[in-house]
Amino acid sequence: MNTVDPADPTASAPPALSGRGRGDSLKSVLLDKAFDLLDQNGPDGVTIRAVARAAGVSHAAPANHFPDRRQLLTEMATAIFRQYLERVDDYPGPCRARAYLGALVAYAIAFPGRYELLWRTDLVAWDSPVFRADLNRTYADYVEALRTSPASSAHPGRDIETLATAAWSMAHGYAELRSTGIFEPRTDAATGQTRLDAMLDLMLGPQARSSETG
Image (tube, rainbow, N blue to C red):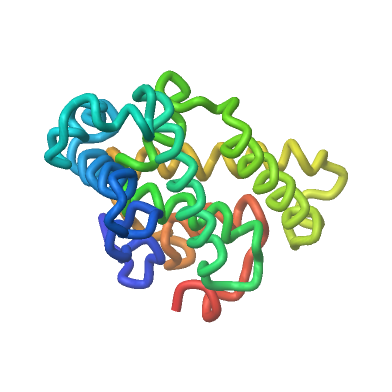
């Protein structure tokens, strides 16, 4: 049976923001317009020319802030990743490792175009020092959160980084399938949990439902 769980933490999303202050500077305007295009048309719809057109400026105007499309998209990806981290901080429940995974799925469903851009290495410079530093810091915190979570005792004797990779891969795959509409929101027949909560329980061990999804 295809049942939508109203308690699914991915069911609602805040308004889309660019991750930058909405000031009057040209750079802020360009970023806002770029995020609008991303949300409407996906990563392939964001070009320097399209952003300039949307902002009502000449095609050469963005060059002072973004010399090329890759730099623009990399700055957007950095802002997107930080938006995701805000969701991690706000995710219900005491387990931070679980929050990293649950927030990943929630963000993908709320903003599929933004989520897609994060993983487009053909468009985003993953070797950008700022972006790479955010990724490395987050990964270290995620692994440490797993190490001190019930997951480590649920999988005794396992390499914690193998568990981290397995859990992240599961969440990322599910996020992709949900954000593209291939998978629909369903409940677990045995527990009545959302599919996501049931999957996280399998990977990380059970957690009290009352504090996590309401």
